[in-house]
Image 1 (cartoon, rainbow, N blue to C red):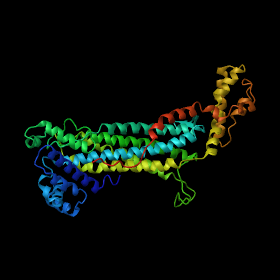
Image 2 (image 1 turned 180 degrees about the horizontal axis):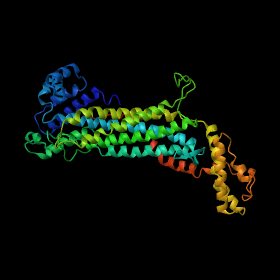
Image 3 (image 1 turned 135 degrees about the vertical axis):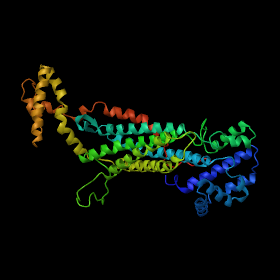
Image 4 (image 1 turned 45 degrees about the vertical axis):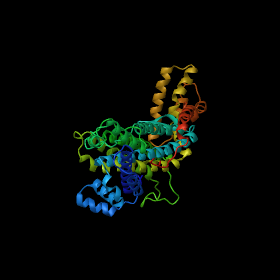
Length: 454
């Protein structure tokens, strides 16, 4: 990701765009020679940044400074560089190329998190754990089933990311206000040649379509769509990391902790969930960063205004870099997530008598009891047992119920129905069905940055 948003990537892409423009113009009959195109191609990577910087200080224009610098490196082609184009030809098209490659890269990072969680969910699909609603003890779920909730959010983000990728378009070379007036002069009014020029340039960079209409820039709604997608990833990762922080507080689940890692400078016993905290911290930043794009898109005056430029040069790269950091941390956490199974089981059993009361009530009815009367007995006994637990005493709900003649059950008989696996519903089957849908997405998934097709 650092490479994608580096000066080399940006300005080499500008030069590739100038080469593509010159090549298309030559193919369509403009006075551009094969030798000029070849010389431009030979000097894509040898950028003299000192010359470009000095020139920009003089002319106060970054694109023209690089046109000048490129012309110094390829003197025979200096006169045809940027022919018919406006600055946004290189700046906007380069951005679209870089953003596309950034999204492709993040797609691999996202799938790596999903792959880690898939293994985790498979391993713990039948491990009962206390469920929570309102962060209060609820019915049992399983450790693996809970992981599928995180995965489902991430797969929703994958769908959104794929949609954005599939619908990205190229700006092309459209002139100062998108009218292609300069090319009408160059091609003597032949609109078909202009369309073909844009098709050739777009195809050279792997784009199937240009925007049907535009002003000077590509529609800034595209930036909103991209940053919204990155924000969605941050939302999902935040939710997962926050759940892990809550569970680590109860020592049920822990993020990786190295042998010599120090949890606190003063409290040597601590195992802070610092990686999950960092995910949450960066996710907040990215969600806030995503607000820049809609504010920019909403105030594009007429054919364009330059107040978008400085904002975009910060908010878009930082959005991608932040998303990359979040996903890398998420990979690290999910790859080494540790379950303290004995604590998980103990927590289950502490609350299981309450969770099993409906089953106990049904059994009491089978033995001749009145459902409404049994419900009231359970309610009053539960309140008394809870009050006792608040005083630090162990739960005595079963002994209280066994003492009620209406139930007609001994404490031992009640204990027999307190196997946690009896209260997890269809969690294992749900995990299996979910993972069966996920596996095709993970086959052949790669984290490598795809090469730009030139």
